[in-house]
Image 1 (cartoon, rainbow, N blue to C red):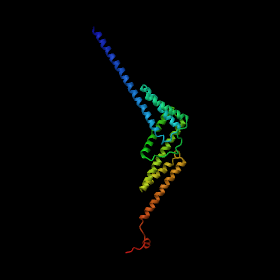
Image 2: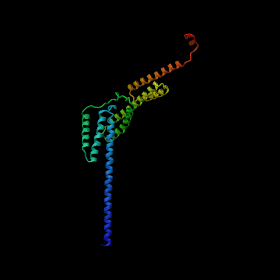
Image 3: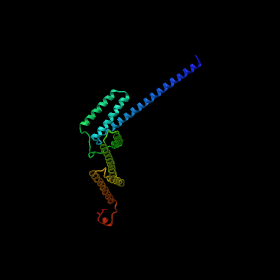
Image 4: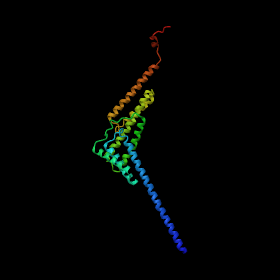
Length: 251
């Protein structure tokens, strides 16, 4: 075999190795991208399900519930395609489709925030605050994708802002009440002044809500002033007339 033939065979072998390596790298890159996208879709599903789990606490309209369930359904379909099928996806897709059918057929959901109540547990309140923070960008994303009408998006975003304001005010009110009970009147008055300032937001605080919260704030302020007067009376030194009319001690 000539030297030239050997060189040609070596070159061909190198080219084959390079080609195989390139194909392998492409396959690995594609597989890594698939896994990354599958993880992203699963994260979307988990995030949306976490938001829906707070439906008993957060007033969610029918339109919002449909949007969130549609988001889950879309991610489930994409996950199934990325995973190459799977019965577990079929079951969840079927369940979500049933949920959407019920929502589309009925009037499930709560449009008004007037019945909203702050959870009594601080941990639950923190979860609620975190959920509302997650919900805002989710709504914006769904609106940008054309899955939510502009007027619905505007209404739902405003509702979130109103809920966040209410939570802020009612958390401050609870803390102020606790401070009054602990007779820390100065700190309590500072919190009450913050409530009054927050209630001045004409867009987010409705007249009825503003009046109700201002009444509660004023009641606490009156309690503080009354407690201060009682304290000053206790600490006030007795004058000569007080001493004169005191019952005489028997020795």
